[in-house]
Image 1 (cartoon, rainbow, N blue to C red):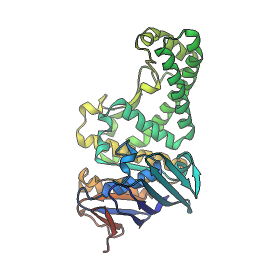
Image 2 (cartoon, one colour; image 1 turned 120 degrees about the vertical axis):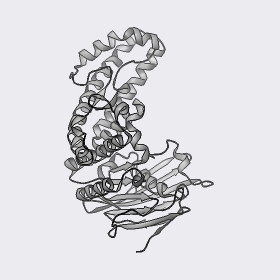
Image 3 (tube, rainbow, N blue to C red; image 1 turned 90 degrees about the vertical axis):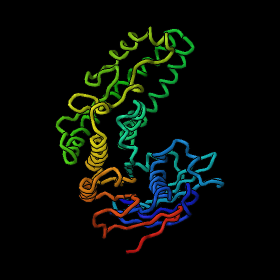
Image 4 (cartoon, rainbow, N blue to C red; image 1 turned 180 degrees about the vertical axis):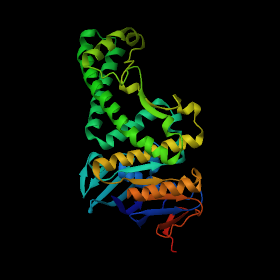
Amino acid sequence: MSIEILEIQNFRNLQDSRLEFSPQLNLVLGENAQGKTNLVEAIYFAATGKSFRTQDLNSLIKADEANLNLALSFLHRELQSDLKLCLSQESKELFLQEKKIRSWQKVHTLLRVLVFTPDSTLLFRSTPSVKRRYFDQAMSFQFPQYAKLLGRYQRALRQRNLLLEEQAPESLLAPFDQQWAELSAEILKMRRDFLETLLVDWKSRLGELGDFAQNFSASWQGKLNYQQGWQVEELKQQLKDSAFLERRYRRTVLGPHLDSVQAFLEGKALREVASQGQQRMVVIALKLAQADFFRSHNDLAPVFLLDDIGSELDKQHLENLLFTLKQLGAQTFLTTTHALPMDFSEAQSFRVSQGLVQVQTR
């Protein structure tokens, strides 16, 4: 799996360009505020329909322009696919093999992209909603049925909360109580099973990066114990037990939409006891574990986008990480403001200056 060509038009400050990439390591060089991060963001946006920097997608369109266009050619098991994304103030359109499609789900089965930025190290210091969204997206990319399950749950939850807001009688709530319980049971089980499987590789990768893997753990946390193996009737009883609070706050006060993954070091919350360096290693190990999981299910490595990671890792850790990605067979994009103290003679290099991306000759 690798990205061969990216065509850019009207994306942030980047000048319109057509770029060809190495299937292995691609170095993106340049000073700060020149457009390096914009380049990897363009790749991520084309592959996922999301930005890792903002939820305001219209801000991605270059100033004074009406729309942006990205075209991505990539290989999946030696078969080439062409992806085109068109974004305007009014719409976002996606084309795969020149046919318009409505969802990125089909794209995710062909192209998987993982990104690490300096902000990534804040994952386990962030709000529960940020952590929940991160792991839900990771599962949704891997399991389309999970994305559909979450969508059904959110629709049922909205209807149920609307009835609670209107103080509707229990007879009207009953069908949505049933839906909430059935869908919650499935979500809780899938989340638990995925994290337990992921944790094996997560701890293994952490052991390669640091010396505290044996003291590390992670689990889903919420009012509902994920280890219990909830049955539908048991969950419905939990709703009944929460009826007073629900009537008071006029919303559903427990369920998967409120839960989050918590990481622990020696039994204590990671955010409270881990150094910044340790938290960085935990998140990098998580990304590698996701790659391991993806490869074990697809026999392919995802594409890695590493933005300014040279400022986050020392020389030895960076060398170890890049060696690991090479062993995985992962195409990698690495942005940096300065020359790195290692040999990158096999890499394709690009230099970004005032939005102009040029191939750097050796």
